Length: 466
Image (cartoon, rainbow, N blue to C red; front, top):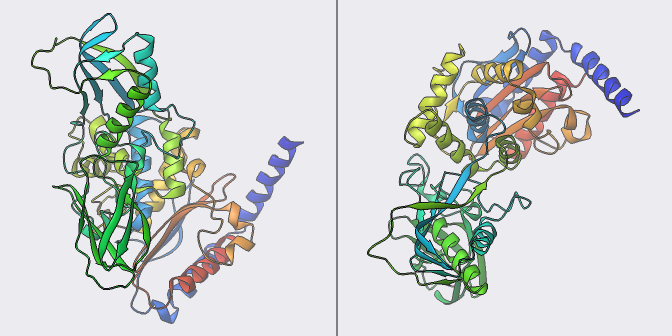
């Protein structure tokens, strides 16, 4: 019965999709573009047939506009093709030195691989690396470690953040950098109480040894706290002013390796494994693999990051693409790999201006035509488990108030993107058996974002909903 129902839904979708005509689609786009609030806006729109690759309708399809998070589709598609949908990031842990009896005469070395998901709350079923290390040591009977816990983060060079990002984004939980060893989503909580600008009872939870807190707030009793991040120190800087109350901010963690080491040290102590934490002068060069943590498959990572629009995850994929291509894992090398890949598939990359993987940089720009051509290529050539149409979330409530009341709430899958003065959507229709791709990027319109989203609703309903 379920198979019959699915088949019927597929047939109904095909029938409804066949009703899409160039004239009605173009009329819907023209109506959207001619709204008075669009007089000073930059707009690029494209609707394309997946099988033929032909543009059915559009508006300035070759204009490059700020992409916001829709750039994540470009990075994700690139990583899936280069690494494979079943790729898992491997984080290896070694005993550096001699294991004799119940003692390691050396260091415990954790080699970061650039895995952005290590210890992530979004994959609770994936093994905890701290527990994996503990179990591996217990299985070998190791009760004492003479040296230290060392983290090798060299796979991704400093700095962790992207130079094209706004400095005001770096301290917040959406502006986390990507490290050779990232941990626990590179986030932590800053908690403090203020009284006339003075901080009391400050804490960072979970703890991040080495991360300072600097108070540069005024003594004014007004709730206007801002947070900055000094990477070189590193330190969280409190600015503005604060009311006399308790605060709890989720902030970016610039020292994720320190958080992991601290967590591991406390776990070892709780299980009676002694760590001297000393710098040893002589260590045997031989290393022994203790354990290897493996991430969830790449397809699962992409599904999660597209659904939640995770910047740090996507930056990890961009660095992984650079590393896979044999380059140093920088953002610049990653974007060069992206450009090279899509050129090799015959796409014109001249409208693609990419400076990061996630779209957080306002310098990122792309055209609607490039987006639909890329989405078409993925749908026609990628294996089923690597198709973005299978990994994107449904439209649901991601646009305005009107579309969720229609069947398009589940019949369209898309990636959205927004920042100040930017609203974008790219995706597929119908979700069951995609036949069309679409992209719409709006920059610098007048009016409210809510009104803009509702107008985008109407346009998509008029294109796909009849």
